[in-house]
Length: 302
Image (cartoon, rainbow, N blue to C red; front, side):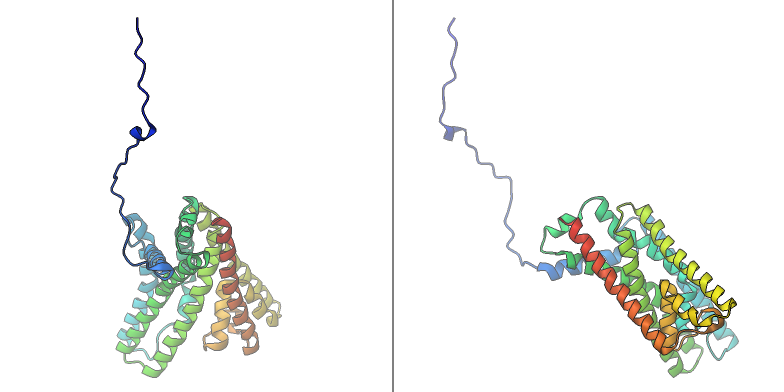
């Protein structure tokens, strides 16, 4: 029986060209600045759950309300009793509410960076015009802005309420401005510390626990040591002990330069000379946080 042999064909006869609809992009190239702004905007919105699921909005919005409600109550009391001043100074409010601030930064710092690490999307960012410094600046600025909104909003409530209560305009404006300076420094410091800790692990739960532990344990340890120093009569060491916690660091800066009443034992804050050291340490921690983030993401993006 004869076997049919395949007829050889030229290579060109098997070639096919398929048009699958790819088109070139002829629009404007917006570049790094646009990418950086987009990343900042997306990260800032994400810090309050905007553009995400309802579940993601619950905690940040709840903490925002918790921050503002005491201020609203204080304003209502001041208006009703026709008080001559607010119950709490503007510079003291964030220190009193530091537990809420710590919880917010612990929940949102891992949300900002841990997911990118977990799903390994950081190298995808760097495959575009965006660079390591752009990514870090956008994330840092977004979290610091979100924290500033959280801490400045109740101060605005206090300020508006004070004006409605017809308190002295000059004094209230000065106090409000001092409070804004204080919470701006606090936002930069806490955002840097939170992002550095959160960037170490891709596990969001571990990041939350680590941030809470660092902020809470450091504050508890410093407060205990300061109380012991005050009880033993070595009050000169109280200011120096305050350098080892972010909360007491902010307290020392504002009591030294912003006219705030110190929360240190005995109500005695650092002198102006010691306050300079506080400012240098605070700015140094902010710069160190930024530098550590740059180094961390250079390694991740490889």
